[in-house]
Structures are given as structure tokens and as C-alpha cells.
Amino acid sequence: MAAEVDSALPAEDAIHTEKALGTLPHEENARLDKILNRKFDLHILPWLFGIWLFSFIDRSNIGNARLAGLPEDLGIAGVGTQFNLALLVFYIPYILVDVPSNLLLKKFRAGVYLPSLITAWGVVCLSIGFVKSYAGLIVCRLLLGLFEGGILGGVIIYLAMFYKRHEMLYRSGLFYCAAPLSGAFGGLLAGALGNIEVGGYKRWPWIFFVEGAATVVFGIVCFFFMPDTPAASRFLTEEERDWALKRMKIDASGSTVLETVDEEKFDWFWVWMAIKSPQMWFCAGVWFFLLVPLYSFSLFLPSIVAGMGYTSTTAQLFTVPPNMAGFVVVILTAHFSDKVKNRGGFIAAGTVVGIAGYVMLLVSEQNVVKYAGTFLIAMGVFQASPMLMGWVANNLAPHYVRAVGVGIVISIANCSAFIGTFIYLQRDAPKYALGHSISLGALVITLFLTGLQVVYLGWENRKRDSGERDIRLVEGSVHRLGHRHPAFRYTL
Image (tube, rainbow, N blue to C red; front, side, top):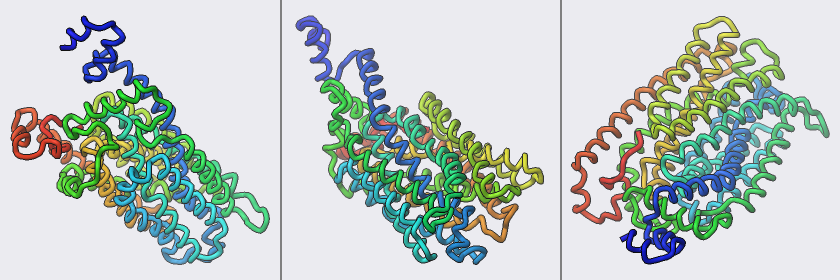
């Protein structure tokens, strides 16, 4: 058919006809893919990187403020676990809003909804600098969690609207590498801001004033530049926009019959499909145990380094190199993960590296060895989190199954904060053996669950390869099979 069309029409018209039929030559498809990815990378990733950078800075800067006198000024220095409680309350609304926020993303337009969230939590972060009481700190941390709660799931779903399944992990890594970078950048900023004493505000308030104000400005700028969907991307030509929509349908491998994500409507059927998906629960378990060390490391690294005998300012600065190492490793592993189309192997390898880091912190008496251990933890733990983002998004389809599944996974995973925020207690300083031991155990469980998920996904793919799942094509509506479609293959 394509050959008949080509012989009957001029070359340019033939190409346009082939585009309409979705039968473009492979070379033309590849050319358009490169153009689209380059444009999406330039017009989307910088904003997502900035959003995640400010997200981690604004939730973690309380750890820097701790060394700059916040507990003393609020009267909670050395008082039980009040500081840990201030860390914990952030995660209560953060967990609760995840699923509903993901469902609202498309309804309220992603290009408006995501910038609204970052602007709102920037205002809250700035307000923490004015806090004069412990109660005020708790309220601000609750509000911060409320507005940050929908951001990670929202970003994952947003990326899945623009990129094909095995192009997405690299982009997830490019935006997520802002997490370790925030630790490095936050440490440098805190080292400078924590020494300012102006207008009656001394040291720690300036960390929140400056970082919160920067977040607000960035959030406002995002309103003007972030597109809602590929169809609404003004920086694409009509030809590029058409292929952007068609390639996503092809990449869906039968999981949807709709032309664009804009056509998908909410249905409780998709909610139940997500809930009944074993791969979703595996990812939730893996991510839960992974986040125990990730969150505790992000929040308490300044305290861990200070426990090695360094002063406040020096400890802030010494948090920079391990986080920079994590930043580089996130980018590298994300790139190679998409190249080989594998997630589980990288998570397992990173977990082993992180385990080695915690062993060094626990058994060594030498500061240089302990400090080297923080590098291994940063390199092993940070890279695994974007892997999980890609893993859960790759293996759930279509849009609303992914939205619900991602929301549930993130909600369950973030319950680990109830552990992570209470395992590094002041009474355990300077060695923090309890925190290091629990983090080590969590990584061992992460490794085990990762192996189980790889085994399950491989088993299911073999069933589909052998035709044992083809019966689903005649059992019911093909357009409601989603990721259960026999043509859909899970990413290991």
C-alpha cells in the first residue's frame, strides 16, 4: 500500500500521506524523535530540574538551620525528640495528597498546576524565617508538606506525557540529580547565609528567607514557559506535534487505543487496575525501604559530618562533595539504564554500594573512612530513586492507571519518613549507630525485594512471549487491557 502511494504522488506528498497513516520510514521516525527529544529536553527538563532542586532544598534546609541555631532560638535544643517531630510532620500531608494531586494534574493543566505548587511552598519556606515558636515551625512544616506532596508524582506523570518509555529514565535522572545537588548547593548556601545577622534576624532565618524567595521567583517564571501536553506545546511545528502524539500511541504497545492523553477520561476501572497490579506493590515496597536511608541521609548528613568533630560551618561545607558525587552518578546511571532498558539491576548495584557505605560508618574509628562512606551512600542511594520512578511509570498504563499507581507507590514509600526522621537522635551523637544500622538493614531488604520484582516481571514477559496471555484479547474489551495487553512488555 505504502509503495503504491509513493509511486502515485510527489515525494513530499507521499511523505505527508505516510505520516497520516503512521507508516513513516524508520529513518524519518528516528529523525523526528531526535528533534522532539531535543526540544522537550530544552523546554521541559530545565524547569523540572529547578522544581526538584528547590523542593529538596526547601524540605531539607531545616537540617542546615539546625546547625545555625534554630533549636536554641526556639527552645528545643536537647529537648527529647521535638526536632525530629518537626521533620516528621512534613510527611503527613505529603503522603495524603499524592493520589488526589496526580488526578488533578491534567484537570487543572500541568503547566499551571505544577508552578502553582512550587510558588505556594516557596512562600511557606520563606515564612519559616519569621517563626518565633515551636508551634509555628510545626504549622509551617505541615503546609510545606501539603504543597510539596503532589510534585514528585506530578513530575513523573508529566514526563510520561512527552517521552517514550525507554527514553524517560534518563530524563528522570536528569531532573532527579537535583536532589543530591540540592544537598551540595544547600550546604554552600547555608555556610554563607548562616552567618548573616541583620535586622534582628540572626543566622538561621536567612537560610529560609533567601531560599524561599528564590523558590517563589522560580515558580512564577515557570508559569510562562511550561507546556501542558505535547499537543499544547507552542515550540513544536505541526509536523512535530503530530508525530509527538503518534509515537506515544505506538510506544503504548496496545495499552491504549486513544490518540492523545487529552482524550483519556477518568474511570474507576483504571483505579482498580492499578490497585490489582503486582508490579505496583513491588515498587512500593522497594521504594519504602530505599527512602529510609535516602531521607535520613538528606536530613542528617550535616549532623553526621559534625559528629566527626567538625565545626558548624565546616560541617556544612563538607556535605558538598558527597552530594556532588551522588549528582554525577545519578546522571550516568540514568543514561545507561535507558541504553540497556533495565532498572532492577541498577537499583540492586546501587543498594550494594550504599550497604558498603553504612558498614564503613559503623565499623571504622577513622574519620577519613567514615567520610568516604558518606560518598558511597550518596552514590548508591540517590541513583536508585529515579530508577524506581522510571520503573513504576514504565510498567503501568494507560494515563490514569499510571496516575493512580504512581500516587499510591509514592504515598506508601513516603511512609518511610516515619522511620527515617526518628532514627538519628541527638542522644546517639556523635556515632549515630542506631541510625546507621537501621539504614543498613533497610538497604538489605531493598536488595531482596528488587530481586523478587525482577523475577516476577521476567516470568510475566515469558508468558506473553509464549502466547499464554493472548486469551485476554478475546475475553473482554481490548481497549481496556492497559498494561495487561499481551503485546505490552514489562521493563525489568
